[in-house]
Image (cartoon, rainbow, N blue to C red):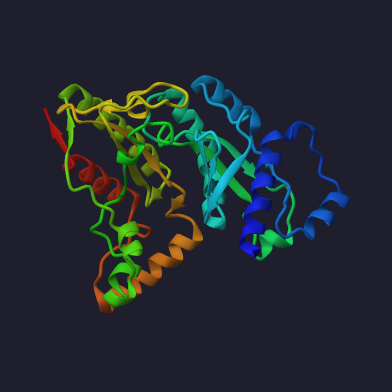
Length: 324
């Protein structure tokens, strides 16, 4: 009951935040006082609305007409029309990195690279007030709205045949996988940490060259921002499907036909919110280095260098492609 109430309240908070005009919102002493005692139904507003609106107009995306998030699971929501995913950023080091270090460079980069594989983030909601709910971790105060790469699946007659993969370089040390005895590690944990694609992406050379070039440019942007631990989210769709797509019709969002004629591929780079220079990552690096004096397990994906992570990430992508 409590979890359902929390999800319902957060859904309404996000919906109201998307509709609220930040230019008309004014913080007041009374507003601070009332908000402080809120646990679940917190007030949210759009952050950097002008920047986000310009981006949405450029790419043909807008969440203004899609304001009813549903089906909350952990820190994710899906909108009822299936166009967007709403991800909460509950950890301080994640939202401070995105908000202070990455937001403006990200939009500058996406403006200059319209066919980038980086996921499109169309809105960012924050709480303008400190609340008991955010202090005690009951309700996240920061939320990003991004494109849903699974857009169109629900209306596809063969939607059950869509395949999804969340891919990261697997040759890193993962404490959940490598320290606990095997019986204590769930299949879900292993799947999440080391999802694998046991096949090949069959690409024509011209498509391969464009894709690899985009991947190199996108990951260089992330490396320059000192980001690590991002993943490649890939969807494999039956070739007979023609699902709708959100916004700009770039090949890896529409669904690039495979060279063998069996599939269409979609792909985005996700979860680039972990930065090596943030305190939490630095602290974990120290812990892992100390442990490795004894255990010699190697780097974690969240404690390696941004350069090393990029190199392994690109090698993973190269390995999964067969050129025709």
